[in-house]
Image (cartoon, rainbow, N blue to C red; front, side, top):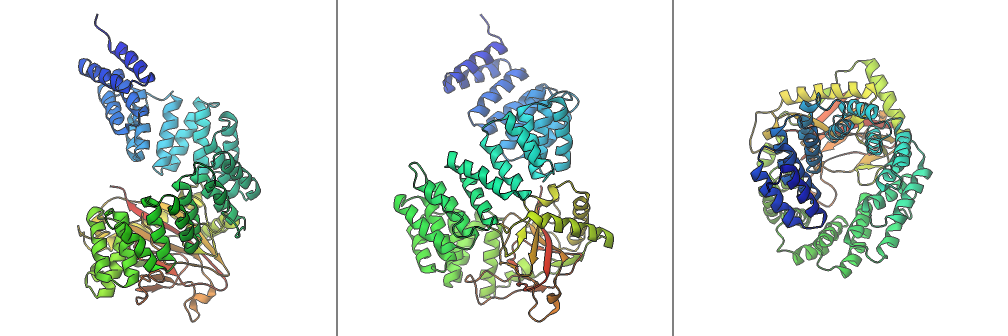
Length: 560
């Protein structure tokens, strides 16, 4: 008797449910060969592979189903979910758009579309799609969870309420409790936020994100000694693996305690001496702590590892040791494997500068790469934006793992928020970006920035920094960026005093890395202006000692 496509799907699904993956796979393959134009069979096979973690294969089958039946909403939604797992939300948004008419009454479609738009940074579109999902499914647990996540990322005033609703519909969901802690902290309800993270640390002790958030909130609440001792308790538990030790050291590194981090990693390596992640982290921490000889000893133990991460660490440490040629050779292997690696380019530039290599001028010295531009905003617009930013900093704290020292930084993506002042600011920044692009040198296929000068650009990772009376930015780079930035909203009077307090310095490396080098540019902060420069340039600021300094910064990345 001939079995139908539906029958094949049912049998294969039953085999998969019994754990007979190979047999299920073979049956699906025979069915797809026998019924090549059956969209629902292709969609079923895609679900099978998705559940098994084979996301690329699943995506190909969902797209096959859509090619056969372009209005098959289920296949489109499944494809979007797979694309989300693969880190391609922009493609998911594009794929879902043609299904809008066929899916107008499907709440799941609108929820997944909102999730995809959120992940792609299209927050206004995501809010519109989420409103459709909620209207169609007002009491749905999954819809409530997605709305809560969107509200948190947009810093919606209703974020706490939306998360509380989601928690009532998804009881015991640790991810929602994690989000709840963040939302409470944004509202300044730090005690309640810490109660949430204490619960997570107690009941989900191996969840490193929760462990790090608990440390971050303790730090923001003013705890300094100790603020991360909960890691000591967790690492003493049976079953605590290297990831917990690495998370512990990450938060210590984030508050400039590399020596403590190195000591803890030494303890971890006594248990797992051949764990390469622990060894690499220890080498980096030792180097940051100034123990460059010990760091090199660890790096030499694993000299056979040729990965870009290890080569970057070797190059950085060789720079500290003054072995410039060897450092450049290591970094060249990184750029051969990852031609756009921001860290490797930044360190290579230090090698070139130390060696007097003219390629430094090609990389960072060309006219137009560093510019300070006036933002197209009138006085009233600037005043309203400044007032909003000051308000946002009321419950902001000094973050862990960022460049700002003795100041506060807004949480989340600034331009994800819904305030109209921020939409106007983003539009002004995009206009300035267009002016910057127009003034760049010609396209250069070998240059990390100029090779992408004509590609579409997008703003990512926007935030605001507030220094009140003291503080500065340590020298750093933004590894995810093509361009980095600083726009100025409040500037202390002492910027015009001797010492250039609050000035932006470009090209000045972190202490101990290449101490004979000094800054390439010193830029006086001017309210209403935007400074743009390649992300491959180290940058920091001179400390202020009085007054107020408030900035908005972001990274730019190519989208094609």
